[in-house]
Length: 103
Image (cartoon, rainbow, N blue to C red; front, side, top):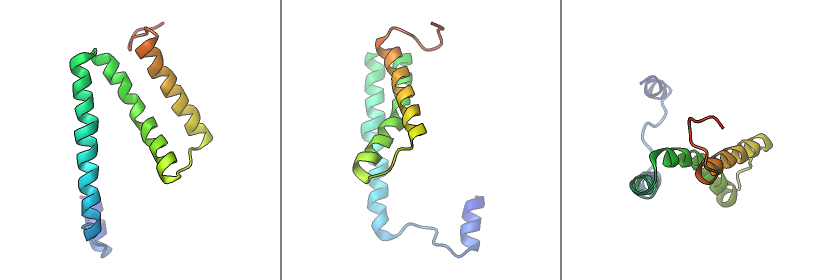
């Protein structure tokens, strides 16, 4: 509500431009239909803790898409963090460690 009021007070447009609506629909349908449906599919076939840990890879995948498709840079520290996340996910999924259990 505060941002809406601030935007209105500043005289900024409160609705997207016409050409933006199609992209907004795609952003809603793509992640919803593909991403979340995939997680629901996985939950029927895999243990819930494995799916929960695999979800941690989602921001890594998004950053890689942005790097390859949009030319976004990945800072060295971010790259290190992405690598650590992927190692952790791989360890849980293939290494036999389970979330919540010290090893």
